[in-house]
Image 1 (cartoon, rainbow, N blue to C red):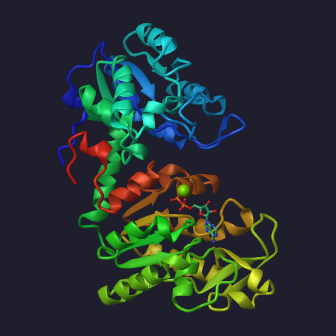
Image 2: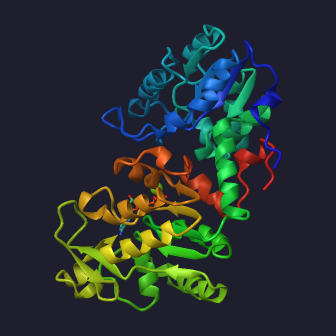
Image 3: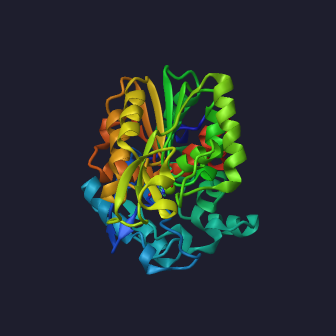
Length: 405
Ligand code: ADP
Ligand code: MG
């Protein structure tokens, strides 16, 4: 424990505080399609503004190649932040250059500036320690203290996440503190029954979580693309559905382990099979052990859990006191294949206890399907970070803030 919190930084009145946020929002044609991460950054920013700090916000956005790329500019995010804070937010057109230096020196107490995308600088993600440290040193020169609040990046040893926190007096922001509190409740003494629902595209992304959580849960529900590797491991044909052949042995091991531990492993009994991977593909409902018998034969692709499965999953979720859900149940981006995801999300909102949604696409899915954030106990802003935490891994961006797992 012993995460350094904001009060460990003392009085911040008039101090230049660099806040590492995760404002990596999805954009379409320059418009933010989900501002959840911007909203999640507000409590810390408001606290710093209230404390009279001169607030310097930095973040990455997308994957530019270590050089400026206008499609990944943080300018739309700075605009959105100003709307949400209901006060002006300055924007620097570079990260550590002349524009950033000028904008920072113009700050008054309680003012906010957003710096341009950290990843426009190759040093941010450099594997080479010296290169990374050199960029972090330029960044550090802009501030007197550093607050780390980008939970989505704490599993990365990057300049603004790790090195900067070593170079300046640093502490965790309120978002990180909240995320850790919730994730801790999922691993230490969860209220029972404890159900974990996993979906998404690839089982290989979630192996660590499955093995870390199996000994802790009462029920494990499997949907999404990974369900087909589970069905195949049980000997069923899955036609052209997503299948990771190289994971079949591992998955068989999980099935055996669940049985040995008395964990209820719930696999779909029916699935929605489509003629192809498209929004308007023809589709039908088939039994999970008869996927190749759909009218699409061997070319059928399973794109969602079926309605019977959705009901069974929803019942299991509703009857639990602790639920962690990661990964959509189907290709929710296509309306025709969003029903399973919607049913699980709906059930999560009815949990009498702690319900947590983790994963970038899962969070986007619940918002896209019309749910409000406050209908859930917690929506984690960190996909990879929350999974790595739940895998029991050491996260460099947390260790550097005093956290010991
Ligand atoms: P998260 O970001 O929440 O951790 P993932 O990245 O693992 O989730 O997976 C999200 C993706 O999984 C979604 O884009 C969704 O379309 C896809 N997916 C879900 N079910 C299937 C399926 N049956 N076949 C292919 N892709 C699927
Ligand atoms: Mg994802």
